[in-house]
Amino acid sequence: GVKKEDLGRQDVEAVRRGCANLGRHIENVKQFGVPAVVAINHFVSDTEAEIQTVRDYVAAQGAETVLCKHWANGSAGITGLAEKVVALAETPRTLDGRGFKPLYADELPLWDKMRLVATEIYGASEVIADQGVRNQFRDLQAFGFGHLPICVAKTQYSFSTDPNLRGAPSGHVVPI
Image (cartoon, rainbow, N blue to C red; front, top):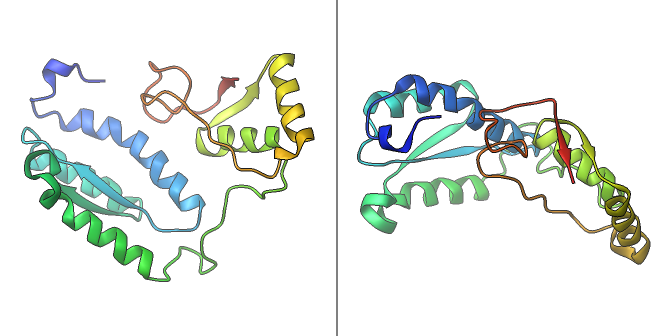
């Protein structure tokens, strides 16, 4: 919610407000039964107070942070993140002891997969579509594609389809 020309000024409160979005991402990763690591994309104008606000928030969510300075230092500035990701991948460490668990079973119908992603990942209350779209889902299912995973694209600015709805909104409707 900060204007681009104001990004160079310290604004711990704006960082704190933005953490709601980050929290939803951490929550989503945890739904899959694996730990999350948060890369803090550091810019030279970021202040220690802003960075510490993110670190404190992430720690309270039960996740870890790695400060990444690839913007200034190229690949050398992201080595710490790469090492952390490799360590997590090589360690049989899960949140519940059962390992990775997908959001849905392969045999779930495509429409139900879409609904689960919209409600469980994006916080929507429902998914709506006109009959033509529903017919496409039905046809894909009938042609034998129902066992495949789905990919859902959305705006980068929000968990909703409205780029002006910031943070981690919930209860919105996803039109398809």
